[in-house]
Amino acid sequence: MNIDIICPLYNAEKDIEGLHKSLLKQKNVKINEIKYVLTESKDNTEEKLKKLNINFKKIKKEEFSHGLTREIEAFESNADIIVFVTQDVIIEKEDWLFNLTKDIISGEVDACYSRQICTNNTIEKYTRECNYPKESKIVSKEDIEKLGLKTFFFSDASSAIKRETFVKLNGYDHKNLIISEDMYIAYKLITNGYKIKYCADSEVIHSHVFTLKQYYDRYKDTGKFFKENSYLNNYKVNQAGGNMAKYILKRSWQDKNWNVLVKYIPNMAARFIGMKVGKIL
Image 1: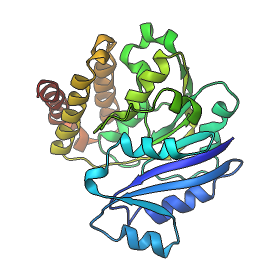
Image 2: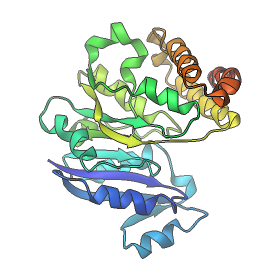
Image 3: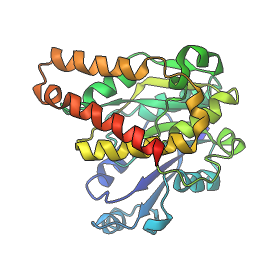
């Protein structure tokens, strides 16, 4: 099966060269095309893309949507598998793409996502550890009773979907999704009888340093997503949020990570309040 890689770009001047090189180094896979979509930027991303002789499509800011931008490229693709990545992932291993797609090629599953590792000492280090463990797993419709909402956990920071299945499910239904488009498609995959694999052997480094305001805004957008897709509220959370909060506290204490411990309560509060506000507005 051949593969198209789809990557939205915005102010990606510092990211694009390293990312592109790492994509070209992937082994034992057939890459049909790398499809970059550049939203009008304030930095020199466009000039750098031209200098590196990298093909790209340019769109205006008002045209960008986390769902629509990816969906348009996926629908226009003629590859067997579509792979979504974000500009800020760092890919160190040459088997990242093979490990991400091999189970789709074998027919075992229709979608996969990578393990994400955070290399800084922020709270994100521990949320990544909790959400992306060392063991791979496959989830299906049969897991909903046990996992509840967690069944639809998925991340297009690094993910792969069989294109035929993506098109059959009508992608993101042409919706202007501002966040959580990955959960949106995961819900459609699972409830329509398809399987999703978490591939722990397909690793990317994905690190952020967010302020409390950024966490608040992010969770407010997530709350709005849940309000607009209220059917997701019918699924149990099954202690997932509480377990993560406990895990973060435990691991940061083990590491004597005082920076995280001091900010722990404000951080959890920003997430909680943001989510509640998003669901109300």
